[in-house]
Length: 337
Image 1 (cartoon, rainbow, N blue to C red):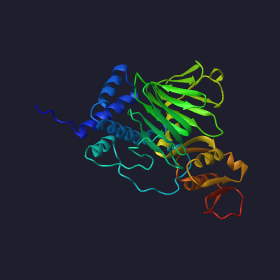
Image 2 (cartoon, rainbow, N blue to C red):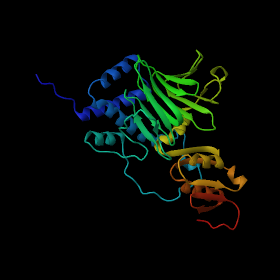
Image 3 (cartoon, rainbow, N blue to C red):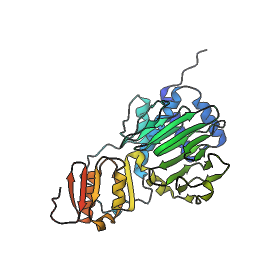
Image 4 (cartoon, helix red, strand yellow):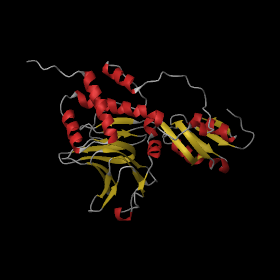
């Protein structure tokens, strides 16, 4: 009797279904069923990666939450963009099933995991699949080391920002290593940010987390939909209580996965610093009152010049570019570009 081999289209359809089920959370039985499914045909792990990446791309239309209305913001687009054909989730999956490819500048698929650190460059966002099917998306200028053993799975966040999607493995808990602390996850999705000169920022998206001291039994629970911000050197016993975070704010915090930056009332000088994480172009603001102006909207992380033109138009400022520096000023006598 001949057993028919599973088709690639069928595997892709099943992977898309698993990603959808992961979004709402899996029971223990479902987690075991997913692990059993991944342990079968070796093509399934790659299918899960593709479905996960495509699911992230499809979030852009709702990245700022159901209450977001771009008409609220007076910041104009720097230039009209050509219209593109709308791509649905169904059509994306159909492209995968027929062997088509979808390219995204912020996603790199099929990354192998060398023993050395995995590092992203300026403006680079990379999706990495771990050996168990879990994934981590690394933001710009991020470096991690992966340590998978027989008893635990761990990723050391050396610096930067990473979003993790963890598949359940009852025999091996998942950890993100920080100085003196470890973030422990059973399954689900979460973000960890560790930038020079700034507090550590942990966001529990789907599934709860625990922050564990590296050399003591101290433990702090982070429930699903919560956020914890703390100085890196603070002991766990002195940390604040994790705060609930609304779903639309979670989406804003994670739009970097789509190559975007979202602002909702931040000062212009802080917005300029955020753009500096993604580009060699620096935005310099010479007028103190202009630097304090609030900014709101969704912008391409790779286009600080377009952002500068938009805010200059909004606030009646002048913009001058010299090399990799863009100067915004309300002073008179400067040429406008």
